[in-house]
Length: 221
Image (cartoon, rainbow, N blue to C red; front, side, top):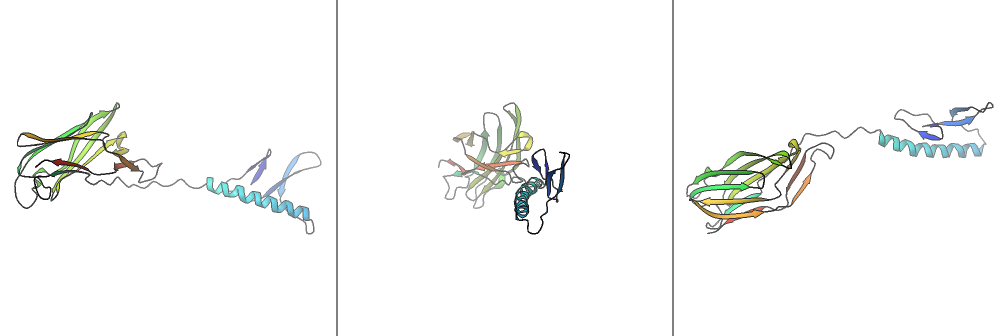
């Protein structure tokens, strides 16, 4: 810790405790703090100086810490939209020719498939990385959609990627429409709530947000 112009300063390399004294010529000089045996006032001076030095040094150590290293974790996504068919006992899709469409004010994705009957969910409607590109508030935005037909319905994962890949979330509002054999069977609009986190640290970029509750779209029997 060094005192200059009435201010105490500690750098990351400082280790010497100094005291400012005034010489006979009126000029200030610096010397290590010391005390003479039996000089109580001097020892009090030393003890006070040590306490101040310890407090300032502690602040300096905190200020001199290395910045937090950023990890390279990405966003972990799971399907959060489920299309359940109330015409079956468990929710899996009935046989038929389907068209699934998910759209928002700025993006839309659509795919079609033919589902066969049977005891095992037909994977004909499964999709991997269906991409849609658009614009939101003047900036590019894209969707990445995956779908998997499971025993309790069609599970859909949707992520909306914004800010040049720095934000992974979901759309503020979207509509799911399902058609079977050329007839619209359900159209439902949703406004999910999301909760997010920075998996690599607040100052390290990527922000991941996911819906607080799953969205269930029910196809009537």
